[in-house]
Amino acid sequence: MDRHLRAACFVIAASGGVFALASLAFAALRPAVVPVTWIVGGAGTVLFVRMLLSRTNGRGIETINREMQGDAPWPGRSIRFRDPEWGLFGRRCGSPAVLWLRAVLLCGWPPLVLLAGMIGEEVGFLWSACLFVAIELTIMHAVATLPRTPA
Image: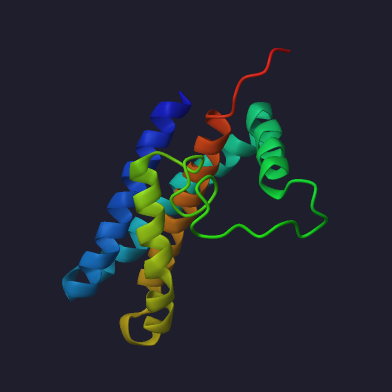
């Protein structure tokens, strides 16, 4: 079930990002930005609740946090963008499609925030919702690819 849920949410987030860019080019699409934001936000909420209610995800997130931070005291060691394991395109952070979606959304977020006064806040909200879904997909992928240990 998780695979289908993640695939559907990936499509929703990617479509939302494309729609946000299209609404910047075509002003006629701007009235539909808020309903699309609600759809993407709903997908993000479903993924978030799924992660909260799953014991496997809870234990997996704790394991990933220990692997990323090591034995360093809080706030832990810093992760660089170019880290081969945990960086922006790290092998533990998602499939290539999720990595590219997250990278595009992450790199496009600052310009949208700076241009929010000219283009409207709604597009920034949609973009942020898509980024939230992409980050959740990254976390779920990292948990799903943890090596299985016998109980």
